[in-house]
Image (tube, rainbow, N blue to C red; front, side, top):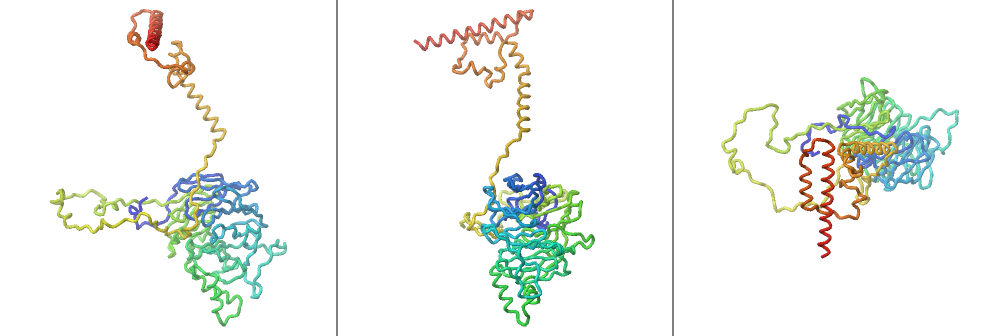
Length: 553
């Protein structure tokens, strides 16, 4: 839709359900970097990729070794790879263009969420958050996993994570932690059960900073905005918090090391990490429903980071809350009476996709009010009819008002049609080709569809054979094959023969045949018709013989 005809005073957020997508029972969704493709994980272990422009299925990926429900899907930065985690404790890396499996590994715990490193062109490194274990870095190239620390020990020299092993039965159950990469993919931010945010260098497995969360409630979700300027956390105290990222976009590790060196008078330990953390993140805003005090599901940012969205975790309702960054609740979207289990905001457009407990993907879009007066600056929209008095020179060839106007347009200026403006929402490297669309693959018809097609063809043939034209043809001595032939002739008789034009005598006999017969009985009419037909055939044969004789001489 053209941008000038959209009312600029309208909020740039979704309002109504536009349509829904259905493919089995869908559990989770994720957009690619451009929002042109939507990946959806299903309950039967398959993964389907929708072309979001046409809303059709572009590709279906399925691992024969996996039949458990998909827990998360994650795109690589340029869209060439897709990471799929399943409830059977598996992590699978796929090549999107070919549909081939690149690598697969089995963890000791079920991964609730897995994300590819956003800083790599062809990532084989991912961050997984298991159900009953600490977040870990999984390297598919060397088939190795590294556990990350989820808490800062009291002794500063003990920062190495424990080795991966099963927890003893005497230990209390492990509370799952949330984790995510930063925009460049060189740091990992972990929200633990103590209400803390840890900033970790995953290569050296060191905690570089610590940020306490107000209320000390366990963190359930943690996610960065698209531009990397804001960090969102969802805690068990039913509050969504927004933090502003104070670190630079590049050379983040060096900046953190410089911050640690410049802090004097504080011994190495928790207090120093908190001091460094205060210079990394600062609390920007808090969001909560002060009336219902509900828990939130799958909170995230909009594509431009101007809006914050969170789904209601209450059973039996499909509600989506939208706030602006200033903290004002601007919209509550109410869907069907189905629980919400996942949602995602489109990277570019004001579109939200939400997944219901029944496995449907609802597409929320904006209900635009078109401003047609934008096409003509002098046009004025009226609520009701008004009496109009025309000007004296309104219908002159050259009105006086047009004479006064001076065109300030340089017609000799060259128009640049080759330079492509950079997309405001794109932060990709132009040297790397990005996968935006997939060629459509035809889906073969099932046996039921083929049977229905055969039955419909037989029904049409039966209707043709039962038509009055076919009955008259049978009465006149012609076969049923004449009716079905496109030319009205039997194919077996016309092959190898040349069509001849009837003679003048034959034309006269046909005209006499068209006249009504004067006979009184039905047998007389039948005999006269048969006699005329015989005369026409004889005349045609005579004309053919004459033509052959003429050609011989």
